[in-house]
Image (tube, rainbow, N blue to C red):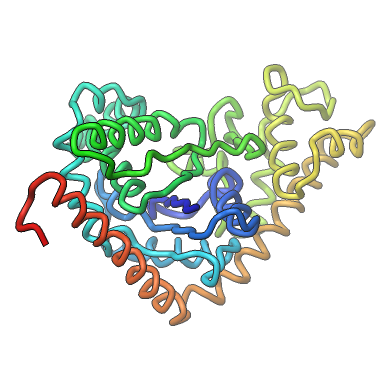
Length: 332
């Protein structure tokens, strides 16, 4: 059994990214279900919108350091940079030739992102990147892909592309299963708790990053939007702010929301926010301590070299098989 996943290096990872994705990667790594685990830095996906090249390179290294600081273990998984495996783009082109424009233009994220980038131009990459995402997965015969609910549309496209290719050229790709962890917390904005926490939000008080100054992160929690009835209870429809803070504390401490609610009966919002702020501060302190150990260490390059070698070994076998199926080049 193999699983693969990746995150774009487009700035600091938010608390929402950690609790919704990276923590899940670490849990899957440690549960021992999978024989092979690949986690990559999705730098090719990052350039669908304009990037500063120096900042992008810094972000790539920073993301690897955060992967390690958050608990990914070099002895249990392979970490690599997407662009260091050329077969990703080779396979993406072949799959694009077996994908339809109508399918791509219906993707929800394309509609959303193309609206945001109309002023600076909508790149073709914004339209076709779900095919690159399919290549990322199909290249390694991944059985399981951990995804959030908002990514299921892309995973379904990957499955459709794989099934279409297999039907046309014969069995080639494993059709992957999307794994949505129902226990994974969906973390919302601290300013508008009806929206998902996002580092692209214009208001920096709306999100917390893993590298935020600890005191600033605590202030963001304490100033989070709540309501006025002073009842600490999970009710997302009527109390989204308090519900969001309960979700954050529950996910970090791995306690049930009910258990936390009981411990705050007859207590006020200030006391509750102080508790959540300290829980977040403790997490960030642990992650940042490890991050600072890794960020300038040569071990990052050693890990990435090993990861690239392993990923290229798997990817080369698959891309050669695909080329032979399609009739490209000379049969070897």
